Image (tube, rainbow, N blue to C red; front, top):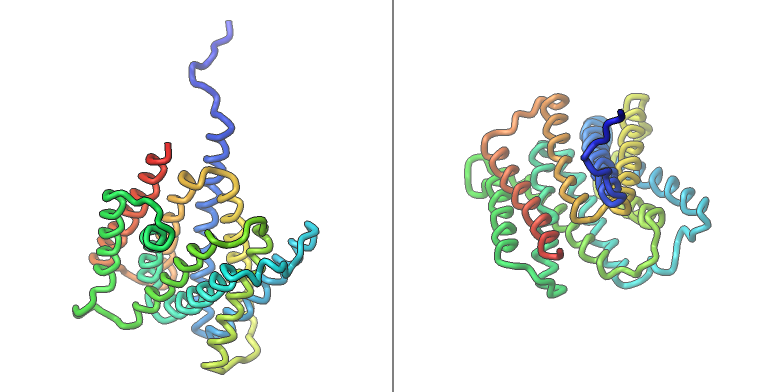
Amino acid sequence: MTQTSDTPAPTPAARDNLRGSLLMTAAMAGFAVEDMFIKSAAKVMPLGQILLTMGIVGVITFALMARAQGEAVLPRAFLDRAMLVRSCFEVVGRLFYGLSIALTALSTTSAILQATPLLVVAAAAVIFGEKVGWQRWLAVVIGFVGVLIILRPGMAGFSPLSLLAVVGLIGFAGRDLATRAAPKGLSNRQLGTLGFAMLGTAGAILLGWSGGAHLPDLRALGLLAGASVFGILGYHALTGAMRTGEVSVVTPFRYTRLVFAMILAMAIFGERPDTATWVGAALVVASGIYTLTHSRAQTR
């Protein structure tokens, strides 16, 4: 006699959510490794040259993918006002986040970046009139308190360079908000082309200001290749995750990036985050996860 299990088979939606969550986790691991390569490469060559090179490689990759699917590489929608605003914010985010990675602790930069969804929620309530209950507002406030604990303004451990990550955070939040008003129909490949074009633009601006470009040696080429490959793979996994599972289920897995970043920061760069950084990061992550999951519960 054969035995049957009483456990119901997972639904297609559940399988998609699981796959989307795994893709999101893989994307965050890819971005953390990309940051590691960028920080390492910035020790042997100008950051502007690194970002410009990565931007060119990414544009070529996603443009070829778009052409293979019969899509326009430079659609007219790129000139839409919302897309132009999005591009400007992305340049700011890429530029200052890159500077923060190169000049400050990777663990600190990664912890501050985790507040991006909280800023998006707050700004969406003000700009787009989205409904945000008092519980989510409280979570947003707690998350920003966590950022202040990490920054420690006015205290002995405060570094003005840590504000670079805050400006990068604002840039990425503005990009995400502008994306909501962007024209529909643009593929992930087209958005990838535009995103890496803005990365290259940020690199060109920084390189024009700092100068110092030179032919990289084999070690530098290896670091550039690593940053480019993991950045492209991470972006590709990210877009796949957002198209596979429910956004409210998949998005909280963005916070796994901090776990990967902390491990790499300690293992590769010998960083030892202090208590304030751990406490602040915990507040930011906990409030972010609550904000996202509470939003899901309200929409049911």
